[in-house]
Image 1: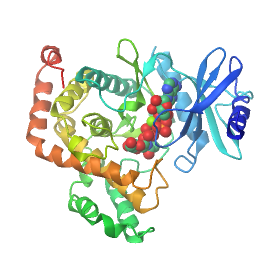
Image 2: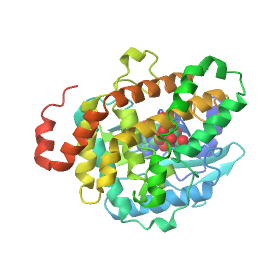
Image 3: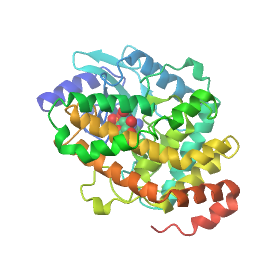
Length: 371
Ligand code: ADP
Ligand code: GN1
Ligand code: MG
């Protein structure tokens, strides 16, 4: 093994793994943690160096995950399985950071692009079901892992500070993008205001519902497990719905350079809405349903301004592969917002139809899944 691998092997040896470690290699497409696949001669594991800049309180973070996964298991759900350290702890720390190990959830796929509407409908149902599960969980036990996570006005204040600071002198070259986010300032408070005045209920939400945070069965393509549980916190249902749409109802990858390939698909929006609302029909309020399209736009605006703020600040938050990576991601988010704005009436009609119809309409629509 190389020097780095030897260091990783040393970390791995401090967890209760079955079998002898054969390889440890980088894995997955997450933007936050450093994720590795450990293969032993008996089974596979996920090793993560947690991002302690993003999540400074590792103890509370892991306690949240222990509580939530324990609850989900008690409900018969497949979920992350924490592998303990030799000392029986849920994580360990060394000079390089804080580490945890999960059992590898075998025979699953996580998608960066929706392969067909049926998979996306299923993802919607899985996240809706997850929301139902969390509603039965005693959320008072949870610690807020990142303050103001989907507080869009707060994100906009951070964005403006990054523009003002312009640490790398990049702001002049992205004036149209910056102007775009300033021009949408009136939108940002809508969800937070609703949570504050009680017109939107505060729930317990996942908060990071992009498609590669759900594992689908490799054979049936049905949702198996929802992962990346680091951001489970109180929030609005609109955050979870919106972030899924932001990522999954696009016809291209989040970091597609060719914007001609990036489109907002109302058909994918419909499929996800059917799945999500289908599960939450008993608890979704009329105001939440009315604001689902806005939730999609809000999460896409918020994520785009986060990418741009990170680009302006020197790419310290999201993992990047090349210098313009965050700017490229921001461009896809702007394109999606523009197309969402052009499709507002269509989205409203889809939500109304899904709210009015029961499973019959859903079954009917399931026939036309080709993209
Ligand atoms: P990040 O916070 O950086 O997004 P994630 O926890 O989402 O990190 O992990 C990154 C990727 O690793 C996931 O998108 C998924 O593909 C894969 N992954 C994570 N945990 C598991 C697991 N227990 N079994 C299988 N794959 C996993
Ligand atoms: C990050 O951790 P990951 O890659 O699943 C980010 C999300 C963003 C997303 C954009 C803790 O998600 O908020 O929407 O990137 N997670 C955190 O792809 O900031
Ligand atoms: Mg992730």
